[in-house]
Length: 301
Image (cartoon, rainbow, N blue to C red):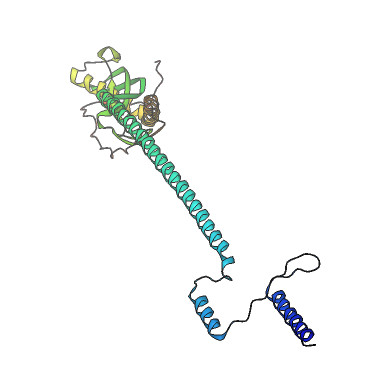
Protein backbone atom coordinates (compact mmCIF):
# COMPACT_ATOMS: atom_id res chain seq x y z
CA UNK A 1 0.00 0.00 0.00
CA UNK A 2 2.82 2.35 0.82
CA UNK A 3 4.50 1.52 -2.44
CA UNK A 4 1.31 2.27 -4.35
CA UNK A 5 0.93 5.54 -2.46
CA UNK A 6 4.50 6.50 -3.25
CA UNK A 7 4.00 5.67 -6.91
CA UNK A 8 0.84 7.70 -6.95
CA UNK A 9 2.67 10.62 -5.42
CA UNK A 10 5.48 10.23 -7.94
CA UNK A 11 2.99 10.25 -10.73
CA UNK A 12 1.43 13.42 -9.38
CA UNK A 13 4.84 15.08 -9.00
CA UNK A 14 5.76 13.91 -12.41
CA UNK A 15 2.64 15.36 -13.86
CA UNK A 16 3.33 18.64 -12.09
CA UNK A 17 6.83 18.76 -13.54
CA UNK A 18 5.54 18.05 -16.98
CA UNK A 19 2.98 20.76 -16.52
CA UNK A 20 5.67 23.22 -15.50
CA UNK A 21 7.73 22.33 -18.54
CA UNK A 22 4.82 22.80 -20.85
CA UNK A 23 4.09 26.21 -19.35
CA UNK A 24 7.65 27.51 -19.52
CA UNK A 25 8.56 26.01 -22.88
CA UNK A 26 7.02 26.56 -26.30
CA UNK A 27 3.83 24.87 -27.26
CA UNK A 28 2.27 24.24 -30.55
CA UNK A 29 -1.36 24.56 -31.38
CA UNK A 30 -3.18 21.86 -33.15
CA UNK A 31 -2.60 23.63 -36.54
CA UNK A 32 1.17 23.58 -35.99
CA UNK A 33 1.67 27.39 -35.63
CA UNK A 34 4.09 28.68 -33.00
CA UNK A 35 2.76 30.97 -30.28
CA UNK A 36 4.88 33.41 -28.39
CA UNK A 37 5.77 32.39 -24.85
CA UNK A 38 4.89 34.59 -22.00
CA UNK A 39 7.78 36.14 -20.13
CA UNK A 40 7.99 35.46 -16.46
CA UNK A 41 6.96 38.39 -14.31
CA UNK A 42 9.86 40.60 -13.27
CA UNK A 43 10.51 41.76 -9.82
CA UNK A 44 10.19 45.40 -8.81
CA UNK A 45 13.98 46.09 -8.81
CA UNK A 46 14.28 44.61 -12.29
CA UNK A 47 11.46 46.82 -13.54
CA UNK A 48 13.23 49.92 -12.20
CA UNK A 49 16.48 48.91 -13.92
CA UNK A 50 14.64 48.38 -17.17
CA UNK A 51 12.99 51.79 -16.90
CA UNK A 52 16.38 53.44 -16.32
CA UNK A 53 17.90 51.69 -19.31
CA UNK A 54 14.97 52.69 -21.49
CA UNK A 55 15.36 56.32 -20.40
CA UNK A 56 19.06 56.28 -21.30
CA UNK A 57 18.45 54.96 -24.82
CA UNK A 58 18.06 57.99 -27.12
CA UNK A 59 15.78 56.25 -29.57
CA UNK A 60 13.38 53.65 -28.29
CA UNK A 61 11.84 50.94 -30.33
CA UNK A 62 8.80 53.14 -30.79
CA UNK A 63 10.90 55.93 -32.38
CA UNK A 64 12.63 53.59 -34.82
CA UNK A 65 9.90 53.88 -37.46
CA UNK A 66 10.74 57.65 -37.68
CA UNK A 67 14.05 56.93 -39.42
CA UNK A 68 12.46 56.96 -42.90
CA UNK A 69 11.25 60.52 -42.15
CA UNK A 70 14.87 61.66 -41.72
CA UNK A 71 15.71 60.07 -45.01
CA UNK A 72 12.77 61.86 -46.64
CA UNK A 73 13.90 65.17 -45.12
CA UNK A 74 17.44 64.66 -46.37
CA UNK A 75 16.10 63.77 -49.79
CA UNK A 76 13.94 66.90 -49.81
CA UNK A 77 16.91 69.01 -48.77
CA UNK A 78 18.93 67.51 -51.56
CA UNK A 79 16.19 68.27 -54.08
CA UNK A 80 15.90 71.81 -52.73
CA UNK A 81 19.64 72.36 -53.03
CA UNK A 82 19.56 70.94 -56.53
CA UNK A 83 16.73 73.27 -57.53
CA UNK A 84 18.50 76.25 -55.93
CA UNK A 85 21.67 75.33 -57.79
CA UNK A 86 19.80 75.11 -61.07
CA UNK A 87 18.13 78.47 -60.39
CA UNK A 88 21.48 80.06 -59.59
CA UNK A 89 22.94 78.55 -62.72
CA UNK A 90 20.04 79.89 -64.78
CA UNK A 91 20.40 83.30 -63.10
CA UNK A 92 24.11 83.36 -63.86
CA UNK A 93 23.38 82.44 -67.45
CA UNK A 94 20.76 85.22 -67.64
CA UNK A 95 23.20 87.73 -66.15
CA UNK A 96 25.87 86.71 -68.64
CA UNK A 97 23.36 87.03 -71.47
CA UNK A 98 22.30 90.49 -70.27
CA UNK A 99 25.93 91.58 -69.99
CA UNK A 100 26.65 90.35 -73.52
CA UNK A 101 23.57 92.15 -74.86
CA UNK A 102 24.56 95.34 -73.02
CA UNK A 103 28.08 95.19 -74.48
CA UNK A 104 26.71 94.57 -77.98
CA UNK A 105 24.24 97.45 -77.61
CA UNK A 106 27.00 99.75 -76.34
CA UNK A 107 29.27 98.86 -79.24
CA UNK A 108 26.43 99.34 -81.73
CA UNK A 109 25.56 102.70 -80.15
CA UNK A 110 29.19 103.75 -80.34
CA UNK A 111 29.39 102.81 -84.01
CA UNK A 112 26.15 104.65 -84.80
CA UNK A 113 27.27 107.71 -82.82
CA UNK A 114 30.62 107.71 -84.61
CA UNK A 115 28.90 107.45 -87.98
CA UNK A 116 26.52 110.27 -87.06
CA UNK A 117 29.41 112.49 -85.93
CA UNK A 118 31.29 111.73 -89.11
CA UNK A 119 28.18 112.47 -91.16
CA UNK A 120 27.55 115.69 -89.23
CA UNK A 121 31.14 116.84 -89.79
CA UNK A 122 30.82 116.06 -93.48
CA UNK A 123 27.55 117.98 -93.73
CA UNK A 124 28.96 120.96 -91.85
CA UNK A 125 32.04 120.98 -94.06
CA UNK A 126 29.92 120.78 -97.21
CA UNK A 127 27.53 123.54 -96.08
CA UNK A 128 30.41 125.75 -94.98
CA UNK A 129 32.12 125.39 -98.34
CA UNK A 130 28.85 126.10 -100.12
CA UNK A 131 28.19 129.23 -98.07
CA UNK A 132 31.72 130.48 -98.65
CA UNK A 133 31.38 129.97 -102.39
CA UNK A 134 27.95 131.63 -102.44
CA UNK A 135 29.23 134.66 -100.51
CA UNK A 136 31.97 135.07 -103.07
CA UNK A 137 29.29 135.84 -105.62
CA UNK A 138 28.36 138.95 -103.61
CA UNK A 139 25.89 140.39 -106.10
CA UNK A 140 23.14 137.88 -106.75
CA UNK A 141 20.85 139.29 -109.43
CA UNK A 142 17.35 137.87 -109.22
CA UNK A 143 15.31 140.28 -111.36
CA UNK A 144 15.87 142.41 -114.46
CA UNK A 145 13.77 145.20 -115.90
CA UNK A 146 14.20 146.72 -119.34
CA UNK A 147 12.52 149.87 -120.58
CA UNK A 148 12.68 152.58 -123.24
CA UNK A 149 11.43 156.00 -122.28
CA UNK A 150 11.44 159.57 -123.57
CA UNK A 151 12.45 162.68 -121.71
CA UNK A 152 11.44 166.02 -123.25
CA UNK A 153 12.07 169.59 -122.22
CA UNK A 154 10.92 173.02 -123.53
CA UNK A 155 12.36 176.47 -122.90
CA UNK A 156 11.75 179.94 -124.28
CA UNK A 157 14.63 182.03 -125.52
CA UNK A 158 14.43 185.33 -127.40
CA UNK A 159 10.71 185.10 -127.87
CA UNK A 160 10.85 181.58 -129.31
CA UNK A 161 10.60 178.05 -127.93
CA UNK A 162 13.38 175.50 -127.89
CA UNK A 163 12.55 171.81 -127.49
CA UNK A 164 14.62 168.81 -126.52
CA UNK A 165 13.50 165.17 -126.63
CA UNK A 166 15.77 162.26 -125.68
CA UNK A 167 14.99 158.57 -126.06
CA UNK A 168 16.62 156.48 -123.33
CA UNK A 169 16.95 152.70 -123.05
CA UNK A 170 17.89 151.13 -119.77
CA UNK A 171 18.00 147.93 -117.76
CA UNK A 172 17.45 147.69 -114.02
CA UNK A 173 19.12 144.85 -112.10
CA UNK A 174 17.83 144.00 -108.63
CA UNK A 175 19.14 141.32 -106.29
CA UNK A 176 20.96 140.59 -103.05
CA UNK A 177 24.34 141.30 -101.56
CA UNK A 178 25.21 137.73 -100.56
CA UNK A 179 28.24 138.84 -98.56
CA UNK A 180 25.71 139.88 -95.90
CA UNK A 181 23.92 136.51 -95.92
CA UNK A 182 23.82 134.52 -92.67
CA UNK A 183 23.12 130.80 -92.21
CA UNK A 184 22.19 128.58 -89.28
CA UNK A 185 22.47 124.81 -89.52
CA UNK A 186 19.77 123.47 -87.16
CA UNK A 187 20.37 119.81 -88.06
CA UNK A 188 22.13 117.68 -90.62
CA UNK A 189 19.18 118.13 -92.97
CA UNK A 190 17.79 121.53 -91.95
CA UNK A 191 19.15 125.04 -92.46
CA UNK A 192 17.88 128.59 -91.90
CA UNK A 193 19.11 131.30 -94.27
CA UNK A 194 18.72 135.02 -93.69
CA UNK A 195 19.15 137.29 -96.70
CA UNK A 196 19.55 141.07 -96.64
CA UNK A 197 16.77 143.10 -98.24
CA UNK A 198 16.84 143.18 -102.04
CA UNK A 199 18.67 146.11 -103.51
CA UNK A 200 19.11 147.82 -106.86
CA UNK A 201 22.36 146.46 -108.16
CA UNK A 202 22.57 148.64 -111.21
CA UNK A 203 20.70 150.77 -113.75
CA UNK A 204 22.45 150.16 -117.01
CA UNK A 205 22.27 152.90 -119.63
CA UNK A 206 25.11 152.90 -122.11
CA UNK A 207 25.96 156.01 -124.20
CA UNK A 208 24.56 154.23 -127.20
CA UNK A 209 21.28 153.79 -125.34
CA UNK A 210 20.50 157.51 -125.61
CA UNK A 211 19.17 159.03 -128.75
CA UNK A 212 18.29 162.67 -129.32
CA UNK A 213 14.89 162.61 -130.88
CA UNK A 214 14.42 166.40 -131.13
CA UNK A 215 16.65 169.33 -130.39
CA UNK A 216 15.69 172.95 -131.15
CA UNK A 217 18.23 175.58 -130.23
CA UNK A 218 21.40 175.00 -128.39
CA UNK A 219 21.48 172.66 -125.40
CA UNK A 220 24.80 172.41 -123.66
CA UNK A 221 26.37 169.15 -122.44
CA UNK A 222 25.49 169.74 -118.79
CA UNK A 223 21.79 170.17 -119.57
CA UNK A 224 21.75 167.07 -121.80
CA UNK A 225 23.49 165.01 -119.08
CA UNK A 226 20.90 166.18 -116.54
CA UNK A 227 18.08 164.90 -118.73
CA UNK A 228 19.86 161.61 -119.35
CA UNK A 229 20.18 161.08 -115.58
CA UNK A 230 16.53 161.93 -115.26
CA UNK A 231 15.74 159.22 -117.79
CA UNK A 232 17.67 156.71 -115.69
CA UNK A 233 15.65 157.72 -112.63
CA UNK A 234 12.43 157.36 -114.58
CA UNK A 235 13.33 153.82 -115.68
CA UNK A 236 14.13 152.83 -112.09
CA UNK A 237 10.91 154.39 -110.81
CA UNK A 238 8.87 152.52 -113.38
CA UNK A 239 10.64 149.25 -112.49
CA UNK A 240 9.79 149.64 -108.83
CA UNK A 241 6.22 150.53 -109.71
CA UNK A 242 5.97 147.26 -111.67
CA UNK A 243 7.04 145.29 -108.56
CA UNK A 244 10.60 144.44 -109.42
CA UNK A 245 11.64 144.42 -105.75
CA UNK A 246 8.96 141.88 -104.82
CA UNK A 247 9.84 139.74 -107.83
CA UNK A 248 13.51 139.81 -106.89
CA UNK A 249 12.75 138.74 -103.30
CA UNK A 250 10.48 135.89 -104.37
CA UNK A 251 12.89 134.60 -106.99
CA UNK A 252 15.83 134.91 -104.62
CA UNK A 253 14.09 132.76 -101.99
CA UNK A 254 13.23 130.18 -104.62
CA UNK A 255 16.78 129.98 -105.97
CA UNK A 256 18.45 129.81 -102.56
CA UNK A 257 16.07 127.06 -101.49
CA UNK A 258 16.78 125.10 -104.65
CA UNK A 259 20.54 125.56 -104.23
CA UNK A 260 20.67 124.18 -100.70
CA UNK A 261 18.29 121.39 -101.58
CA UNK A 262 20.83 120.26 -104.13
CA UNK A 263 23.53 120.32 -101.48
CA UNK A 264 21.55 117.81 -99.41
CA UNK A 265 19.30 119.84 -97.16
CA UNK A 266 15.77 118.49 -96.81
CA UNK A 267 14.34 121.55 -95.06
CA UNK A 268 15.47 125.02 -96.14
CA UNK A 269 13.98 128.12 -94.55
CA UNK A 270 14.83 131.48 -96.11
CA UNK A 271 14.09 134.81 -94.41
CA UNK A 272 14.54 138.24 -95.98
CA UNK A 273 15.20 141.28 -93.85
CA UNK A 274 12.96 144.30 -94.18
CA UNK A 275 14.47 147.25 -96.05
CA UNK A 276 15.31 150.44 -94.26
CA UNK A 277 13.11 153.49 -94.89
CA UNK A 278 14.06 155.15 -98.17
CA UNK A 279 15.66 158.53 -98.05
CA UNK A 280 14.02 161.39 -99.91
CA UNK A 281 16.34 162.52 -102.69
CA UNK A 282 16.47 166.06 -103.92
CA UNK A 283 15.07 166.90 -107.33
CA UNK A 284 17.10 167.08 -110.46
CA UNK A 285 18.74 170.48 -110.71
CA UNK A 286 17.63 172.39 -113.74
CA UNK A 287 17.68 175.99 -114.73
CA UNK A 288 15.59 177.48 -117.47
CA UNK A 289 12.86 175.93 -119.57
CA UNK A 290 9.89 173.71 -118.67
CA UNK A 291 10.63 170.05 -118.04
CA UNK A 292 8.09 167.48 -119.17
CA UNK A 293 8.50 164.02 -117.60
CA UNK A 294 6.04 161.62 -119.19
CA UNK A 295 4.71 158.55 -117.50
CA UNK A 296 5.81 155.10 -118.49
CA UNK A 297 5.56 154.73 -122.23
CA UNK A 298 5.76 151.90 -124.70
CA UNK A 299 9.14 150.94 -126.01
CA UNK A 300 8.25 151.93 -129.56
CA UNK A 301 8.12 155.66 -130.14
